[in-house]
Image (cartoon, each protein chain N blue to C red):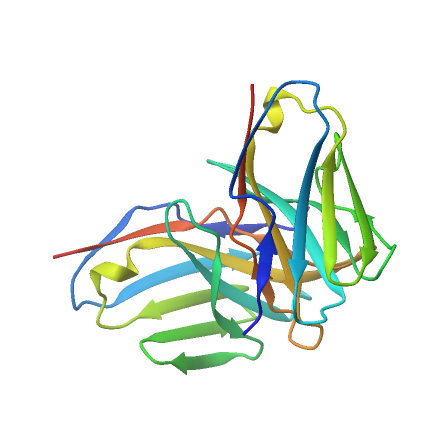
Length: 113
Length: 112
């Protein structure tokens, strides 16, 4: 069973700080990695995709990937109260039936005023 | 922008009823997925489809079936609803080259 692990939190950060969200995965051959944001009662929204080792930046978000350590992270700079949500890490894996995403259970982020 | 729509936001059904959940995407994606999401268990894949009339079981297919007669539409069927199928049901479609999945708004199903 391929696994994706996240700390459930809650992770509390003050407004304006950097929030760091972490994820580890078990499938060594995974090539595609995603971060989703999910507000309470809403569906997941894709915010970042990363495919190569290193950093990928998009506005206040930076995704970091280290395939050797099987580790992917999401940094949120200048955190805002509107960033308060659950962040899901997802990893694409190929199984006998095709390519599927395996999701972590999510990290709850709280940005405090 | 990718748009994935689901037929209902909230649905209440009785035990034993047959339930249809429909999902439509407008991006000509070949791959579509049905998940359920429960507190503490995360997103679990029920079924997916990589082409019209094709389907594959996910991790928890028991008690469910699916139908994909047209590329843009993927239906989830609960043949005889049970209370343990009370959940949030999420449909997604996937862009082939990037493997990015896009979710619909979800259907919160309550079976009483």
